[in-house]
Image (cartoon, rainbow, N blue to C red; front, side, top):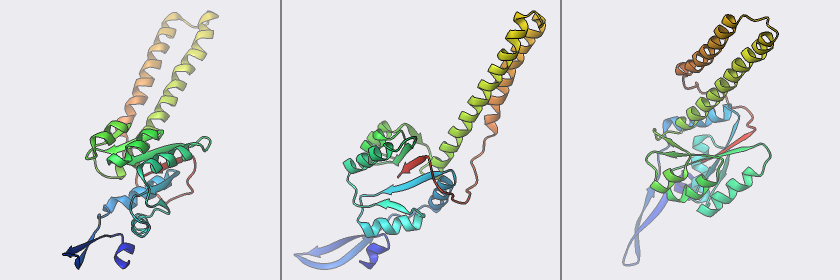
Length: 220
């Protein structure tokens, strides 16, 4: 029990029905995992850990990773059911991170899903995004980059509409010289492209303090 509380799975070695000893197995948590959890929570994302391990093992791993909400002894179909339950909350976007065959149903059920490149073929097929680094920080980076991209899209739409909203009425009323109108349209295209190119300067965010999560859920 003490070993299980440390996050270890136990295997009993026996010969002819006589127990010879116990082997304790454990997955080593990556150093960056806790930083990734802090980063995700700082982005307003609620993190839930779904594990097939027993409660004691799952609790120890969740505590080490800094995850307050976890579910233990979860079967593959139960993971998918939980994803569907989380999706019932209005305006929530539910993500799923996994790499095993057992994660495939939940990956397919999520609004957006991430699979590690070292994962099983079925997990890679079910996921929307394949992470090239087997690191949870890649999840935070992917979400951060997607948000930056959406901001650029909104900004570019504003620039494009602004030129047209201002220019077309002036051109119709004959108050805008055709040469200036053509130059304005060219400037519109240049500003949109230049603004989009600023994404090349994007850098992964530095982990921040965790804040109250709202609006998104991420199961792992």
